[in-house]
Length: 65
Image (cartoon, rainbow, N blue to C red; front, side, top):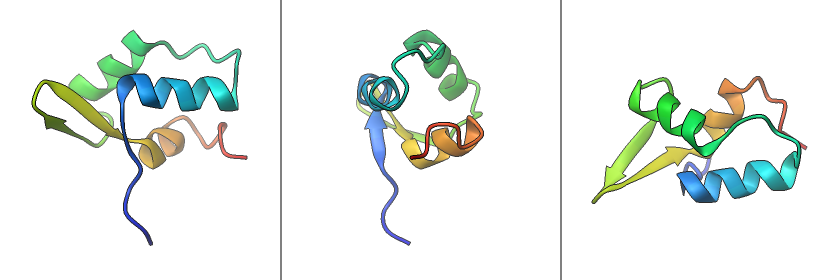
């Protein structure tokens, strides 16, 4: 298994929008999942980095191609 795909909130949203342009997930909803510790993440300075693979798993693999 390779290194996790760590992305900022904006980068993660960009990937989600590319995979599903009509996604109902918003940056605010993603941020709430992070701050409530429902998704693995790390803070680098003031930025959250979310594990994009874990985000896909959390969303039920609906975004995997």
